[in-house]
Structure formats: C-alpha cells, structure tokens
Figure 1: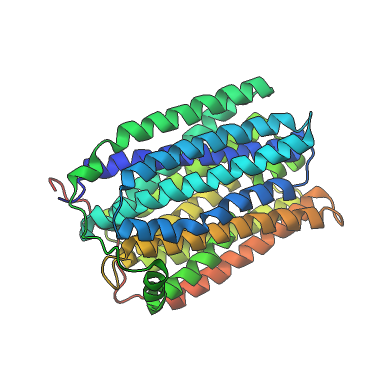
Figure 2 (figure 1 turned 90 degrees about the vertical axis):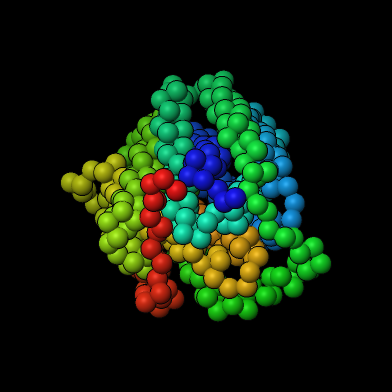
Length: 428
C-alpha cells in the first residue's frame, strides 16, 4: 500500500504542529530579546544558528529511514523533544532580566533540543513521505504538507500575537505552554498507525552510512541541487531574525503587532504556495523551474522596496510589502519543494531519505548561516548608521542573493524533463 490522500493530509498535520513550535523561537522570542531586553541581534541569531547547526544530523536520520527502523517513534519522540526545547527557550527569555548567565545557559540547552527535535521528527516525516508516497503523488504531497505547515505557522503567529499583548512573562509562558502541548497531542493523534499500514521497503542494514552518502553525492543532479538549495535558502532566511526587530525599532510595532506581522507574512507564504499548487497542478501552467525563478525574482523586487523604507519615507505600506514578500517566498519554496520530492527518487534506489536528509542539511546550514549573517550585518551597520539605513542595507544585500539564486536556477534545473506538481486525481 501507498499513502492515501487522507493519510498524506494527516502527515501534513504533523508538519503543521512542527511549524507552530518553531515559529515562536524564530520570531516572537527573537523580537523579545532584541527589543524588550535590548540584547544584540547576534544573540538570538547565534541561538537559532545553533539549532540549525545541530540539524546537520539530518542525512543520518534520512539514511536510517532508508535502511529500516521505526519512523513513527522518531517522529513522535522528536516532537516531544522539540516541545520541551520550545518551552525551555521561552522560560529562558523571561530570565534575562534577572540572571543573564542562567538565561543564556538555558537558552543554549533549549535551542539544542529544538535542533534535535526538528531533525529527528522532520526528516523522519519527509522520509516516510518520500518512500511511501506513489511517484505521481510525491510533488503534490509536498505541496499539501508544506501548505499545512505554513498555515500552522501563520495561525500560531497570528493567535499568539493577539494573546501576548500586553506582554508579561506569565502571559508568554501560558501561550507557549498551550501551543507546545497542542502540537504534541496533534502529532500523536495524526500519525496513528499510518506507517504500519504502508508497505515498507526492504532495508539494507549492511550499507555503511558514509558509503551511502558517497553514492548519493556522486550523482550530479543531487550535488548541483544541493548547492542551489544552499544559496537560495541563504537568501530566504536572511530576513528571518531582523524583520520583526526592524518593525519594532523603525515602525514602532509592539510585541503583539510584530508577531501578528509574522503571521501576515506567513499568510502570504501560504497564498503563494496555494497559487502555484492551483496554477501549476490544476491548470498545468508553467514548469517548476519557471515558478522557482519567478519566486526568486519577485522576492528580490519586494526586498528592494523594503530596503527603501529604511532609507527614506515611502508611501508603500510596510505590512503590505511584508505580505508580498511572503507571497513570492511561498511561490519559490513550494516549487523548490516539488522539485526536491521529484528528484528524491531520481537516482540510485532506496536512497530517497538520504537525499532528502542531504538537502535538509543544506537548508539547515543555509538557514542558520543566513539568519546569523543577517543579524551580524545589522549589528555592524548600526554602529555606523541609524536603524533604518542599517537594516535597509541588509535587506538590499538579501535582494541581491535572491537574484543570484534565480540565475543559478536557470542553469541547474532542467526544462525539458522538468516535473510539474502531480495532479490530484479524484477517486485515487
């Protein structure tokens, strides 16, 4: 048996739960550290970079999924670890005003748990999708699960923003506790016995991990796509740690308002993904390479406009620009994910999880490096310029990276054999 559409949707609920916890650590807690506690942007940048760095273990998780093992155990166990890390990270933020050393130590431990949880749960889930989904459904399955994850991120950010104002440590802990508990319960309920109902692949326990990695890395398509993922995700994540502080410092947004802004941005991501799913899958318009390039170029343009708001007054509404950025980010992301799912099975058999893990590791490195680079550049620029121009210069640099990613996509991704997102056939 292969995964049915209903089972794919249930796995999407797990992705939604994962995104709901992660968004708190990368947006809300980051903003509180920089604005409310006047800490340098480098600190949350380094913490988020730590959790991405730990995700270098993703290829190992994927390889383990390829060669046998209970994926459900790692999906649920990883989510529990992620929830514990999220709760600990929130509590650590409340300690910064009282005991900086204790808060920093708890933050490091908590973000370490977040990295382990995301790596174990996320990669095992992707491996299950890649190996138990029928080939013609893989791209569509990726679209469904990522749309649900973005929906979870947008919904969590929006609701959390409403309940966080007026800010207090007690209110923060209550909101985070409800979210992480709900995420774990949703994961356990959604995953159920799905894995036991699909036909597992025959394991290859005798193949060493490094040998398996060498086999995959020797494939030109896999290697080139890995390099593209690294560059494009650097551009994608560079604004992650600086957008909310920018809204607070330059536009005077409150913690609740900036969290809601993050929700609006992810709402734009959701609409962008949905647009590609409907037009490319339903209407059969455009190849994946074209959608990836359009998303990168659109993101470049909007970031250039956001950069201008830091240098001079602009009649353009800042929130509207952020939503537009999310839209083009979503357009790029879902097309890239569709290409990823299609390419996962293009090569040596029984290595889908290893390839997904390799690309996940490239994304994690780029996300951590990109987020940290953005934070460091802002800290450096603020020593020489006012907040607006300092942030604006970094947004302009990010726009240039998206332009480079679009140019690389034109060279790396193939057009003749490009794979469109699989259509959902009624009754299958």
